[in-house]
Amino acid sequence: MRDTVRKESPLIRLRLDASGAATPGDSILVAQERPFLGHLNIRGGRGDARFAATIARVLGMALPIAPNTVVCDRDRVAYWLGPDEWLLVTPAGGDTVIADSLREALRDAFSAVTEVGSGQTVIVLQGRYVRELLSKECPLDLLSPSFGPSACAQTRLAKASVLLRPLEADGMELIVRRSFAEYVWAWLSDAGAEYGFRAGT
Amino acid sequence: MLMIACPWCGPREQTEFAYGGEAHIARPADPDAVDDAQWADYLFMRTNPKGCHREQWNHAFGCRRWFNVERDTLSYRITSVYKPGERPAEPAA
Ligand SMILES: [Zn+2]
Image (cartoon, rainbow over all chains, first blue to last red; front, top):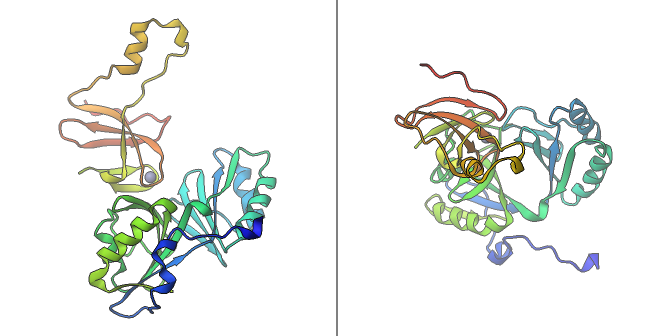
């Protein structure tokens, strides 16, 4: 049964693969979806010093302690979501094994490890005017240089909640709920038209 | 528009937050021991002051945590922000 289940990106109806490739350039703003990555929501640690140590031992990386920061380790990114909540994004399919190991190691701790990858997706924007575009409907001060690599922020984009992470070289990563993905994409393509918004592949 | 300093995320615009009403309302420890009037008072009656008000806010579009804000309902000035379980600095007389 398992092989017969076809995974569908929440943006499948937009037929992005048929819209033609674009590459980042000075006046072009390129959006790409990165579907099917592993997303793990990790909760726990309130008043439990062993929690952080256990996670660090199992993952081989520490979770970010400072609010609104990320820790990157090879192909994994850990995002601070709250004082007792994190998101770990892994390569496709990597989340199940990690989730099992974490649950085993944390079985005596007050904690929860939940696969949420089917419920959200990743959109990456590249281009010189990415921050101007997002500033149209995002209340964060995105033009401030303090919001740079190693930062992240959960905030609002138009009427959707998004998790933003600045990338190198004018890039911005958006993690959005599955049910809001089409809405966010439609908003980006409309608000980004003046910057030459293109779907990349 | 208020700028509210989430205890974890720092200053964010009001549109990221949800209002949660008056803070520090304690549920009766033994609900069976109070009469209808006392229960209705707990459920419905709020102080609605003109001036210093301690209230709950949720950082709904951000870290989704509840916290407390002390705000002047006349000037909208926020005088204190503190986490659940904490007490605000005593307001100036
Ligand atoms: Zn917050």
